[in-house]
Length: 536
Image 1 (spheres, helix red, strand yellow):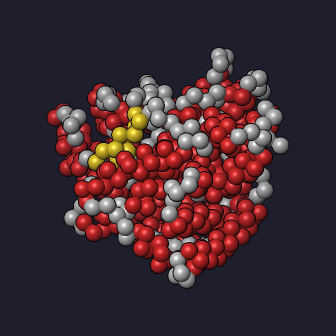
Image 2 (cartoon, helix red, strand yellow; image 1 turned 120 degrees about the horizontal axis):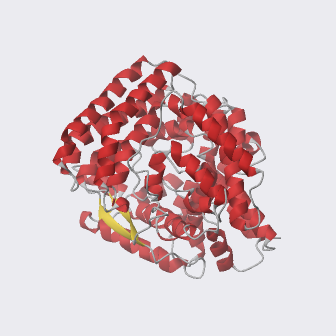
Image 3 (spheres, rainbow, N blue to C red; image 1 turned 30 degrees about the vertical axis):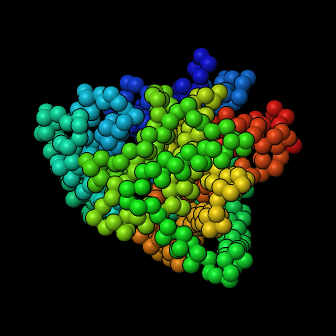
């Protein structure tokens, strides 16, 4: 573990040995031809790797912020990886197999991977049937999986079978020699889907002990699930009251939902959607000056999603914006804009001005994820440079989640300090987003602690939190697959707010310093700020 990134590099080597698809999204060479292992000895080999790293932790240096942050991340990630092998191994999740298999291929076709490594793509295509065959065997041995996970996996199988047979041949990189391997891979997805109905149903809850461990070890939240749920419930109730009071005061006694419905009905015409994205992003960058230093050296290239990707974009975890590969950043990142479909009215409702401005321009682009990802590439900690990388089913290291999602949500509110940037109706929409994030804390905790059934959680999302009915089921399946991943949005914002209140310097200094730590746990950022004497 020698060298400036000794422990961090040793952990990353261990992680990528079992998660090679993550390396493709991180821009780390040497892994693009590999799929994850799913053989019968993989768990034992991973445990041995964890044990070796724990021995090395004893002598790992703590003489710099980068070393200290890397050590903090490694300790938490190892503890939770070890516990997952005991209680919720990834090889018991059918959607883990389908997600990794799908994005092992799709990830190599995205522009961030240009020029495409044709040999690596062909190698993964050829290896995919064996990987999914191993997956079927591991799942038969497990005997059961939550029905929502199976439904998601079946949907992804259908999407990938269609992609490999009908859509991949339309991709510019298509090679005729891929035809037979693509058909074989499509058949393996179909065989995987055919096996899923034979599995019994399993409890989607991780359990209180597992959730509490994730909260403490990865997020630095020591207060326990019950205390965080109580704080989120209080915020949820308060924000609900404030939404109605704000609407009545600013809109002549009208109901909040009526105001928000009108806001969602305002959209550009069909030919102006792309321009609206670009203009909103530029306006957010301009409004942020003086509050935070926006990242402008690494551009966002807005493009229409190619037809060959439309099917997988609908049915898989396909993001409009993905974090750039930190170790191979190139000149910019692509932001995919969905092209119009046959239902023009529905398309324009989705592409309304407020959604483009608040979600696509501020949260994901401009000063949100995009600026954070750019700053992370220069972080002292190796692992904080890549922890928030968007991978097949979520970010690479959950320990970075409170900083990653907390900052993007916080950035939405930060621009309230820019005079005239938001309308009163948009401010109302932001408060509704905050309330939904508080609601997600409640679902994350109460589902995994066994206090709510899946049906009760779905009802709460739909009837009380105001989530779109079409979104509820998929949101809950994602909640159940990744305990502790949905609470980090609201908890991350609250942690950043608390740090800001204790900061001794200027506003600009605070945000630039915060982002300089990259995708570090917020509790570790707090410790480093205290060590430097920058917070009271």
